[in-house]
Length: 123
Length: 107
Length: 200
Image (tube, rainbow over all chains, first blue to last red; front, side, top):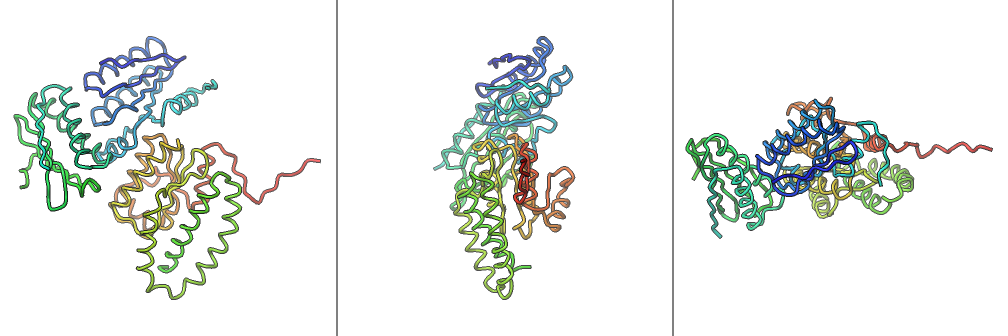
């Protein structure tokens, strides 16, 4: 299952639509890393609102993604982690350390604007 | 209300199936959503270990009862040693997670 | 001092209803709290004597009343939540509070949370761990947590379970925590008593 990646200005937005298998998640990671280079994106937002489980593999892959995009000059922010998912994650010691997080897409965009020092006004 | 499901684990899509089954059972037994998410996450970890290290195996998800406490037992079986995980709850309100990595299953 | 702990409970329950009533107008709330504070302190002083026997029963009653309050999480300002924790906290209550807080962060789109533990007498390692988990889980939802009212005993418990207090955002008291939160949110913090100079 391929995750749609949208380009919004200098940002890439990946909205996960359904539960992803490990292979799908790796594909997403690689696709985003590639597109960051291709479009010279400054920021990446991964929307995980739909994910009802975030386990060690997902955490590791998202951390890898953040690292890979940073090497190519883009900041990644994960948005939409559900309260129950966040709770389960911390209880199992999965903290997504070193990865920026925001509440939702709107906050994610504001965060990227601030981090990349852009002052675009958003509706 | 005894309930038991065995999910064969061969590929990573089976991992998703196993945790969804776990979540279904948890909801059926009245676990609150935070607890069923915790359960589903733990099942995901166990199932992935099977795929990663043993190539094939199965996940058994069963309801258990102890007095007025209802819980869920998850057993991950592969070609290697048996991993045994117990999740029990007071009708889903309080969840204790006890991990028994490669130990014998308590009765 | 043991007996003063009870009056803090009474005071905080009352303060909470004030919060609920005036939360939309922060200036007004501040004014009302300023008026209420000295009265509360007077109450604290007069009942500080001879309350010890009643302590256990009253704490239990208050705890029940507090448990019944559906939302211990208060929205005081836009994007700012306060979670005052009082009395004796057990593991189950701590979990409940965490769940309610996380849902509150999502519902209110909070960016900063002030967790006030002034009213918590003691905390064992399990509950201290819950506190740390709450801070970490809140971050995953994009919210910054400020912990206020950290007693030396609780600070010690946190250090014992391996928490790097340097990394935890702590401020002395609740008021200070709210001010710090406003700073983080970009509000200009003006003390209530300050009057803007009139230009003629």
